[in-house]
Image (cartoon, helix red, strand yellow):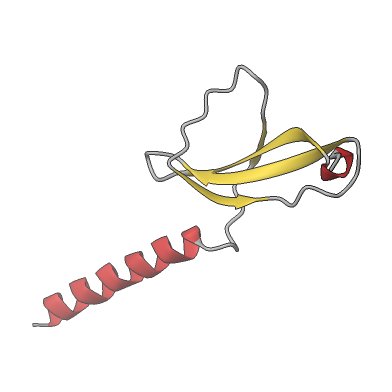
Length: 85
């Protein structure tokens, strides 16, 4: 009976650790994107806000791949301030 209780506690703690790793407090290393980067995106977790300027700015995307690993890439994007209505 004690062994079952110990196994249950160990199992629950591993699920708690997995959930904690998926939260925003976990920061994967930032990779630089270029056109030769092969992206395996299953789910986008976060996109940075593009500022309202008319110039190229750094942007980031955090995503989960098909193996469940979380990646953050940094890339360059055109600001939103150049749009003509």
